[in-house]
Amino acid sequence: MKIGIVSDIHCDVVAFQRALEEMGPVDLIMGAGDWVLQYRFSNEIYDMIRDYNIIAVRGNHDMAIASSAGAALRASGKISQEHLERLDNMPAVVEVHVEGKRIVMMHTSRLDPTGGGRDLGGAALGKVVHHYAYNGGSYGRFSAEELGEKALLDETYIMGKNSTPTTATNNGEVFIVAQDDGFQQHSMSDLPEVGADVLVVGHTHQPVVAEQGQRLVVNPGSLGQPRNPAFPHRRTFMILDTKDWKASMGEFQQQAYDEI
Image 1 (tube, rainbow, N blue to C red):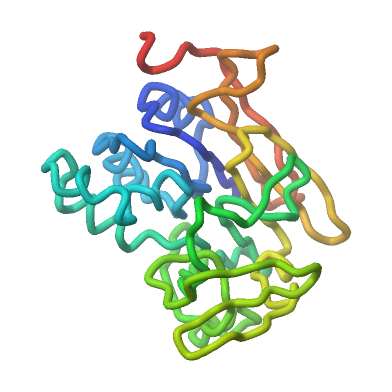
Image 2: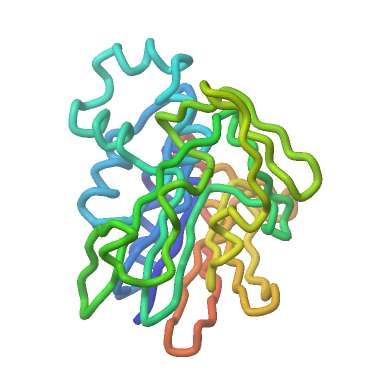
C-alpha cells in the first residue's frame, strides 16, 4: 500500500489541494499537524481533512487555537461547529498499525534529525493517543487492548490535550512531569516514538527521510510557509510505500496562497 504524508499546511488551501492531486492514488493519508495558523482558522482545510478521511494530529498552531489564547477566534463564529469539535478531538499523537508495523505520528520529536523537539508552544504533557489499524483498504480507530499488539499504553505520557500536568522539564534521559497529585518520573523509553517502526513528524518545515537503526523517520516538510531561502516556493510531501518501507519526496513550486 501507499501512504501519503503531509504537514504544516498553515491555511494554504491551494498548496494542500495540489499536493493531494500530485501524490496520485494512495491508500491512506496522514498529516503531522499545523493545519492552520495560531491566529487564523480555515474551514476549507478541515473540510479536506474530513473529505479525504485523513489521519491527523495537532501541531503547535492548532493547539494555540484550542487553548485559552484562541478563545476569541473560537467564539467569533468563523469556525464551524463541526470543525470546532474536530479540533477539540484531534490528538497530539496517533499510532497506526499497518502490515505488522507501528507508525507513530506526532508534530515534533527530538528524534527528528532536522532539529525537532517536544516543546509544542508550552503545551502540557497529556495522555491523549488515538490508535488505528489498517486492513484491506480501510482503517478504524481501536483501543490499545483491542489491537492485541504492542501498542502505546494508556498511561504513556506524551504531548497532548486535556492534560492535568502543568509543567514538564527534561533532565537528560528523564522526564519529570508535574501533576495535580505531585510529581512523576518517566524515562525516554516511555515516549511513544521510541517504539515506532516508522516515526512521522513535521514542525521544522525541512523534509527528511532518515534511518535510525531499525526505525525510519519521515518528515514531509511543509506545504505552507516554505522556509528554505534557496527554494522560496518549494512545497513538499512524502509517499511511504509499505512494499519496501521506503519513503520518497514529492515537490512542486507554488507561490503563497495569499499571493495567488
